[in-house]
Image 1 (cartoon, rainbow, N blue to C red):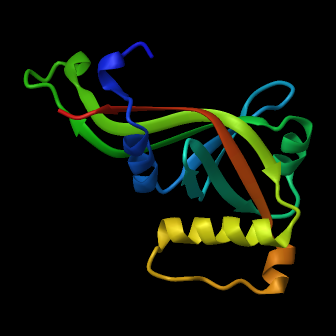
Image 2 (image 1 turned 60 degrees about the vertical axis):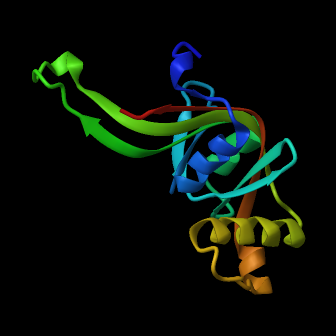
Length: 159
């Protein structure tokens, strides 16, 4: 990381940033250009492993691309605040932020137990006060994606 003074090195701090974020942008490979899609997500962190969960329709471009290449990148950011320059110099403006980027292997969950765990993780991210129940119909009609994170870094600027 070029700006090591902004690097978030502590794993728990990185997880805290992810917990503050509402959306993760997945970068999926195409033959020509990356395909970037914003997604709601859930987080599962045990020991040194980190898993991100997503849900989507059971068909579409995203799934077609993942079938061809399971390696993806991701990015999440939050807590944006514009910091104007005291002298109103445009190049002196900056932005406070926190962000996490990483990469890993993504797969489609075929097992209802995996789907259920992923969906509960997603819902817990947005509303940890409830234990959601999913019907068999809901489990069979939704696609759940599991991203095993291989590399993750965090960065922040706070003035």
